[in-house]
Image 1 (tube, rainbow, N blue to C red):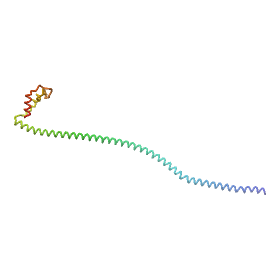
Image 2: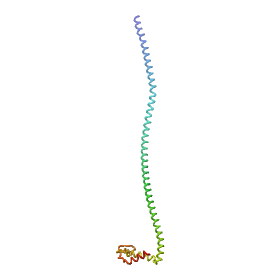
Image 3: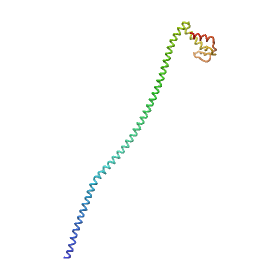
Image 4: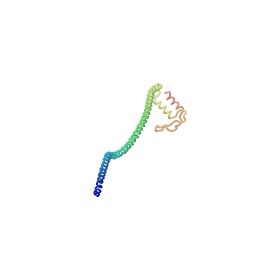
Length: 196
């Protein structure tokens, strides 16, 4: 009996060990399953976030490339507009130069107009004076031809007191020093013209 008991005793003692081991294994499996469940529960949102971050990174790189391209386009457009502004400034400067030039021409034309008005007024006064002179010469008996001849003679012979007078060549041009003037003749014609 002793032998049977000893044989039986170890098997009884072995049985609780195997139950304990089994319980430990079940507890360990449950614990591992719980950890895996918790890990999976925590991992799923992290994986989603990682996917979103990766997608966002690609979108950010795409946006960065677009931004670089847009910046380059804006730089080109800015350079173009700067060129246009410079051309416009030069054009306005030229318009200002043209305006100054036009004002100078207008001023010159006004001066010429004033001068021509003065000449016309003098001509009118001279015409009125010539009419008076003709009347005066008519009263004295001096004709226009005599008066013109007196002036021509003065020019031909020279002014009284000059050594030589200008001489008119065959073409009607005055040139050089002519012959010595006759003081009596030039004085006579001068006085005749003057008193006429």
